[in-house]
Every structure is written in C-alpha cells, then in structure tokens.
Length: 99
Image (cartoon, rainbow, N blue to C red; front, side, top):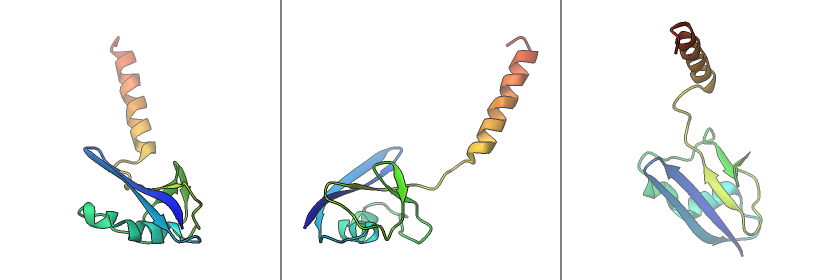
C-alpha cells in the first residue's frame, strides 16, 4: 500500500483526502476510492475531467507513487485569451482618457 492524497477546491471550499491505495493504483482509482466525488455536488469524473499531480497536468491512467497528491481541476470559467484581450483594451482606453 502507498499513501496518497486527493484534492479538490472550489472558491469557498476545499478538501484534501489522505488515503492508502494499492501499489500500481492509477489517478482515476485513487479519486474513486477517496469518495471525494460524493462530497461535491456536480463533481464528476469523465474522460474530459482535468487532473494533475502537484500542479502538473497528468492523465487519469497514470500510476501513482507514494506521497503524491492528486488534484482534480475545475473547468475554466473564462477563456484566458479573451480575458487578456479585454484587459489590454481597457488599458488602452485608460491611456487615451488620461487614466
């Protein structure tokens, strides 16, 4: 058995669940075994769900090592490119107006 953690966070609530999994367990297996999906309404594990280990994106079928933390990522609520464009446009507007 190896020790791992499974983590998920919302802006107002976060949870890290420590657990022991069989050696050779995958990210997906650890998430399912942790029970974290039942603790956050609307959280589902699908092939499209983004996951990582210590802030590094990974695949759900990756085999875990002792001491690793599995992180489940929320979908983006805004396109980062669009946010940058909007900020740049606002900055230009402020410069023209004497900001």
